[in-house]
Length: 414
Ligand code: ATP
Ligand code: MG
Image 1 (cartoon, rainbow, N blue to C red):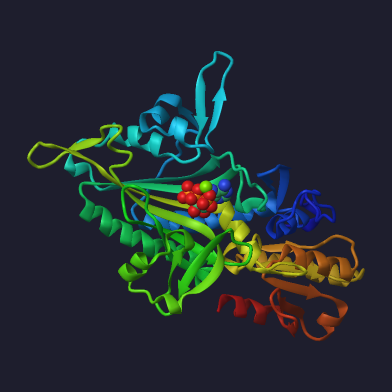
Image 2: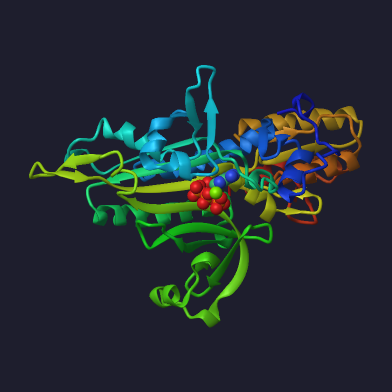
């Protein structure tokens, strides 16, 4: 893509009330636009990141047997009354239309997915089953001061699984723990993301959060490095530690962001809807459920919090909006001709390139490249051409290296 054609430009000004690092960098680099507290629009560069994160999540969900759906954002009030959450959930958005009909804006979809799946599942032969979606969710968050980490409108992946018994749920739930780890590895934060034991609510002892360690986090977790797991501060007590076989003296306290949360719901939502299946003996049995949430936009914000420096963002390759930022420098015709050729060469080979074809000076182009944070900065100048090619610098490194374009392409392929 030609940078001159990108409709957004990097910005110096940010909204006065924006205090979080992720939002400040994402607004300056024009990945997102702030509409109001906790509400953001995604611009071309930002949407490319979201799509890449989503593609990784979809791939892993499909491999785990999930079938993708897209449920409605408007939820009938009756569904929420059935589970008691119309009155008990304080962050639920309730909307009234001109005929005084009330609906909820979906903050999560148990109240929708249960009556939906119920229509198709009758017998033990229909189970197990899992469905998921990636969708905007709405929650009346009071503290919306963390940029896209805590939106009032935000993008979530939510999966729901349905089983004939607790044993089958347990097997699937353990498989999903591995799937979640794979996703965090693939987006580039696996090494600092811990599976964390948290309260399970009324239906199971624990739920499992996936927590990424960073000072920007709102949660406090206690990590056992040797075991590679953590315990949320809210559930930390001697009984829990004994059960997990964790020695309190080994725990290290850290701030962390909850990037995912999985629950064994069991019959919590199936029972209120009387969701049953017929077993081999033709008896009605209440269906057992699990749910698996992951904040897609929060994951993007987390990446910015943990992969950035004072100059800007440092995108991991797997989710970067483009792989290469190609920067022709100077006013020479020859340089811009060469840059076009190199751009075509990269594109032909399937590498995603952003070509900064604007007439700006080197300092301005470098500053924008650092802010936007693509993994490779490739400079074409009279000097680099004289020295035999282009100057390649990784965003995360200080120094670049001049090399032939072919050699760089070989390097990328490797
Ligand atoms: P939190 O404790 O941070 O409010 P939660 O327990 O309410 O999170 P869940 O209901 O389990 O979150 O939602 C699943 C996932 O969706 C979370 O693990 C998180 O990654 C993401 N998420 C939840 N609330 C928000 C929000 N307001 N903005 C962005 N992402 C969110
Ligand atoms: Mg919440």
